[in-house]
Image 1: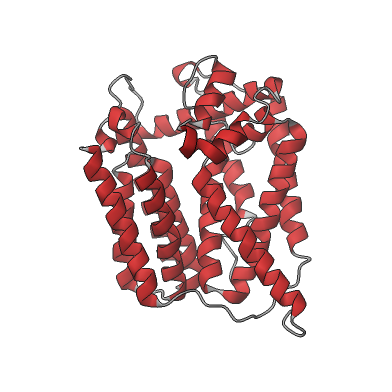
Image 2: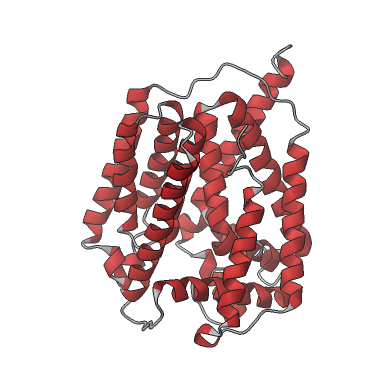
Length: 359
């Protein structure tokens, strides 16, 4: 039995890696960064323990085989193509390539973007989970390129990382192949992030790609450090605008910037920051516990039922890994978590209501 690289506990390793990068960035004093207080490390460690507790508790639920249907192969292919086409239309209507223009990037996340992402990401992952054929790597790469052109590295990371996680469980690549996939993902993320930043017309950057990575990690950690003394300052505004952002066209991360920096600027604050800024320590611990519980449940379910559940688990794990730095302020991610929650409740209900269906 091989070591499970992408169990929910992998998030602990990601948090440690993120902290290492952030502390390196602050230690080098990149662009004036200063080291965070010891209290910020204690808060992050406490939140991580809450996550672990949620994952551990999920092992107490019994999961067994039930009949499921993830959709026919042609139907999934049609959804993937639809997602790709809608994103292509979105780029055409923008009138340029957002990756190469800060002004266009600011307008790139439209309702069409939302619909295309909501169609493409789950359908390509479920397709790769249920029908892991190499020919489907082509639409995965095509979609990655189209979404990369919007200039948002997190989208690229989620598409490639979720696809890698899905293939890890469905196609079972060798360690060498897995290493190649992860290396390609890292290079793509660095390049997209670097090109996008260099293309912002009103900013001047002299950092190289690695320094930029260290700086962004360090900057986010310093924002979280400031949030500790501002607990509850936004009083739920972040959660409200996260859930209604497409109605009000308000970026929750701009509210983070306003509360922490004193002016509206899209600001990342780690996975622990928004709930702490909105409601305080108890909310942060509750959030981390629930994330761990649901990830743990979906991980166990996908291990038994495969297909649809593997695709959804891969998406929410990949999105949560990205959240470690950016913070949970994306409506589309909460939509996927809602799908995961409904899926988990459905499976548990079937397991506990049908005699002999759980093991």
